[in-house]
Length: 184
Length: 350
Image 1: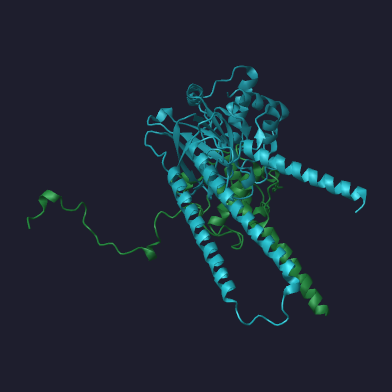
Image 2: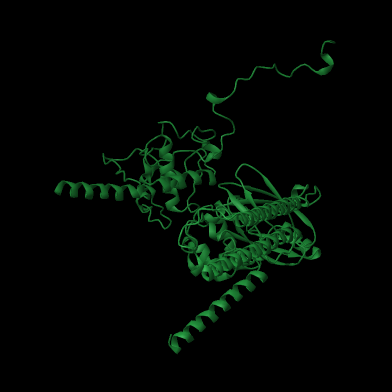
């Protein structure tokens, strides 16, 4: 009896904890932006005090990360970084981070901008959205837990995957014009 | 029943009748009603509705009348029934029964066939307005508002607006409908039937308003949190008035007229507004949110949800999540003086 009760309570707690993943924070209380104000662009600092990395709560929340994914398109991050593969800007889906891959470092990169191209979005994007973007950017290289990161693209696939593409016979470059055909 | 009880019952009955009357008349004169058609499409749809209504009402009354007659007859004959079960069918009664059932089946088939033909001809009539010379309007449904683009062969003559469609009275327009997120449905009951807006696919419908007026449209396909607040306004106006409106909409936004509006414009361009909105004639040219070039000329804000007044606009800019939770606009905690300047600027965008 006792064991059943404990199990029941445990299960209920698990369920309640799991609810946070789907929580839609329409009126969000984001991690404070204040704590990144002391961030510097350089990794060089006197002494051996390492920066304290605080977790970004949005990395536990599917809705917030999906919002980050939407904003990544809306605010035209795709314009330079493409869908993670990079272009004018560096790729975001690899393990290489020029200015650091911790949540608050990405926050600082978006808010402050970086030399050679990355503009500063200070004052243009509300803090909580920068945190959502930061969470999504980290999910691109698989740094957030898989049970909360976005599971599919909202973009339409313009063609079928290679696996299900029907075989097409190569037909040369331009074909033979009617006038050049041999008379039958 | 006591006298008080009878009075209560009578009062309840009277209120019920009044409520029914109010509902019925509201439906007949409303700006969002299929019973008040203002164009050929809605007219055809409402004719089909009244045909079906009267025929079905007649059938219903007939069935109830037969049922009542049968009950009354059974009650009259209750005492004459024999005790033994009726094992030998009465040939005369059987014949009569067969006649009645056959008649009812034939009548049903004929009525359904008439409905089929009527429905078919109505559907055909909805496509009859198609004409390549029509005025073309592209409507893009988004969670949870409508982007309206007046197309023109000359690129500089096209313009975008939001949640408000103006139509010239007596002229047919072609509406090209699509969506950029989920399926929505375009429905102006006074002007025509519904048509779905499908992401990545274009649907077409034709509308004509024969009577000037303001009609309300509504998304008719569940599309997420604020589906119920995804409305728009259709203004049908005489051709000269419509042309004047179109000319005004084509122009870029008027430059700020005084110092406060000037400051408001600076606030707009320096804050998150500029990440999503367009004001033609300024640097703001993002296209994921409603075009605000002529915001002050519109009757409503927030997709038909609130009247376009300074108070509502202020509340919306400051914290739209309290007014329409889930919408895509972030809260903007501006300093009071900045907010007032911004509102003055937005109100100047006639």
